[in-house]
Image 1 (cartoon, rainbow, N blue to C red):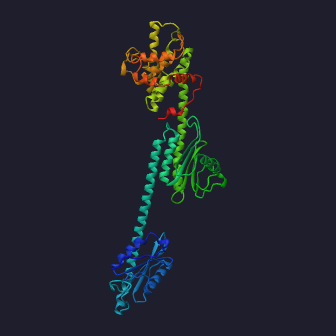
Image 2 (image 1 turned 30 degrees about the vertical axis):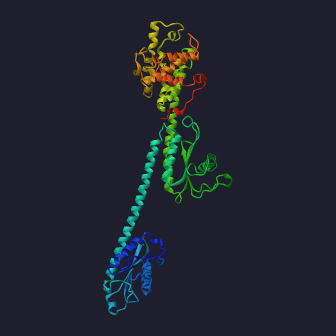
Length: 539
């Protein structure tokens, strides 16, 4: 028996998606001698009438089935009829969303008509007459139950497909939020966080490109940030023009509400051309407009509410991060201001050491960078150099500023300043990492240093770095007891004191630098106002 049923080329949208289930049902019914056809509300055969030989829409049988289908659709109730060939036809409605979407019709020869031999070899059901006219009502109930079963299966499959799609989308969005959360740190660079967000949006939203803008707000964001991902054929000038002339004014007129435009057209004189056809724009707000996120050109269809919701959620997360970033930067700027003021207070006790702490800090940072230490460690070295002499607050000025040779007692007083510095700072948890450099910066590899007489590798790297920077600046600076030493003399003495006083590796790193240029750079900063550099606080 041929069960490869063909369908009409034009399928009604009211029954679209149910073709496979109805074809499966037809196969089941043929096995029990019932010939199924399915019709939409316009009278088209979704599953057309078919005879045993495989012919469709042949003779009066097809017309009889269509007539019953039309009555089912018109009345919304099961209908019966008699075929011109003497067989029987029954039909039941197919419902979708409480409306009749079509009709399922079965034709079958009856035992009564078989006695009159009313049908020939191209009969409308295969396997001979199995049912009488009295069975018609039972067949209606059977057909109605089977159609309801297929409809339920179809709805369940649709819901499962929809649920699976929603779960997949939700998983992608949650993964995106998690990835962005890991990268959008308060102490990180806003540009890096923005790029992470845009990369995720490009992946999840299926778009041609994404644009992010963060306006400058020192100290956290010292200059405007622009990030672009995707395949947009726009340069930075065009994007800035788009933001300034098209997006920002529209956001202003909407009171800061997001924009969804699936029919975007740039003015002819804007220079933007037809690159942008669709966009979603969501502002970043922290009491004022601080930036925006743009999704450009959907690759499959148009932007919808789900896209707007996703972009708005990412923007909300970005707003929190940027607000916290600014607070963090403000606090760090305040901290750095206090620490610089503290170090200047020490230097102010002796006019000959003016700027010494800052120069030691700069050189300590430079040595740490040359050693390849992490950015956080490099900054810790800067702070250790800046505060290395903080303990001199506890040293009397007549000892600190004495021009002649110190007595043994006075020298013992001086030797206490590393320990005093550590004690002063030990209650500030954020400065724990720099105390080790402060308390050991006068230790020497040969054990001749103070306060504990540590030797070689017993001296932490922090102490060795600050110690070399301290001595180098002292040798290249004017002091109460002498003028600054000649650079050739400085280099020769540092070499001579290695490795008894200085770490061999650090000396090699220092002397590989352009020493005259280094000294000039350190001196050039003596009268420059110190400012907060957010790069110092990047992990």
